[in-house]
Image (cartoon, rainbow, N blue to C red; front, side, top):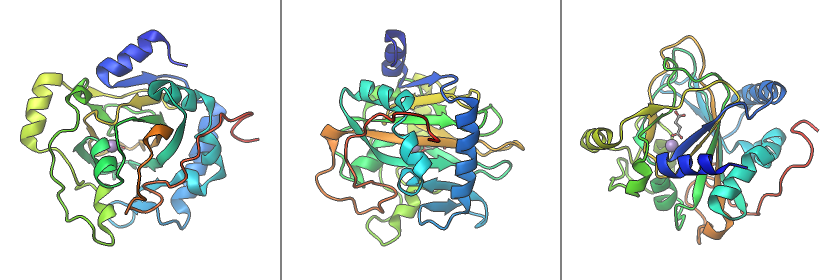
Length: 266
Ligand code: SIN
Ligand code: MN
């Protein structure tokens, strides 16, 4: 569970980095599992613009036994329940690969606008629990946050691509992201809030608010920057209608998660 100082930091800054959450064994096993998912034939697998480099895999908990246990690991599940003051389920799970010398940008954005507009999620009663699968350094495209920007609520942002087409969800995952902030919005937000990089060692956990403005640059380093993100939604905040997006972006199984008993590999 998070202590009072950690809860205050999450609420004030909109994010919190907790080091050493994964054991070395769990970290190594998860990295192996992620490499397996990168190679597997799965619709939630997305490539970079070069058409060959893996950008990410989505819906991991739906296709991997290991991930279906990971999302129930008390070290991740308990803080999510504590922050949302309710039972939770997984709305999304993904790994962004951000490969060495090839990983592309995530433009500045807020997450909740996607879940509200695309999936019909009623309120921002939802949180991101991310795990660093590699060391995140200033050089390999770490997550960048505008601390405190979640207090602004959802910023007025227009969808860039046309909504509703068969494959329109693809622009929710690409380097030219829908609902990205404009340069003008960003300049005034940065003047007000500043910027922080979520650097840390592999195995750390990063919790962040769904309205926090964030993004990340290209990976200019010879080291990968893999980031695993589990989005837990409150069971009191289930969308009324099924999403028009694929299952791997908006899970329909809203059963409250029970904490895992035993380890990830049992
Ligand atoms: C995200 O916004 O979901 C991920 C950004 C990143 O992987 O850097
Ligand atoms: Mn995001």
